[in-house]
Image 1: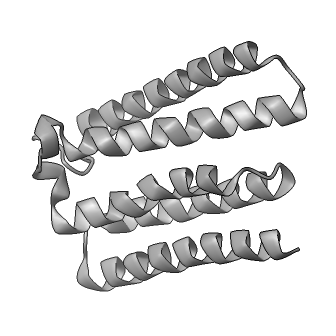
Image 2 (image 1 turned 180 degrees about the vertical axis):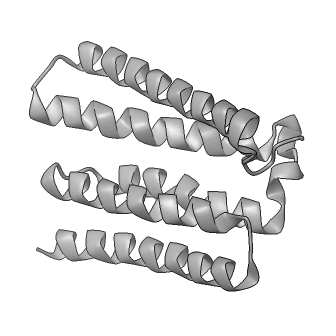
Length: 154
């Protein structure tokens, strides 16, 4: 029971953070509003998946880390920075891919009782597929709708 309370506090804090960014973004007309709305939906989905199939708390933090860094980067212009010669965007992508891989791995391991090697391979392939769909949607949005994601060079 105590463990569930800790998890609820972690997810609740992240939700409050994203909701605050969303509200401020709406009033100030910031670019981060669409991202925050999407991230709140993702957070809710992540919460319900984690509630049904509990994940270790470090994995939860690993998953929430890019969700917190993304609106901060959009709001304060970090996507134009290149710490260690690597773009901020790459850190965010790495974080989301790590989250996706770990969550899918633990879900496969818990739900299907598959072998560890098979779960790792399927998780990596699934995240690559999801990432490619995201990039395709980014391209379609920028090419045909006129929506440019944060940090876009155009």
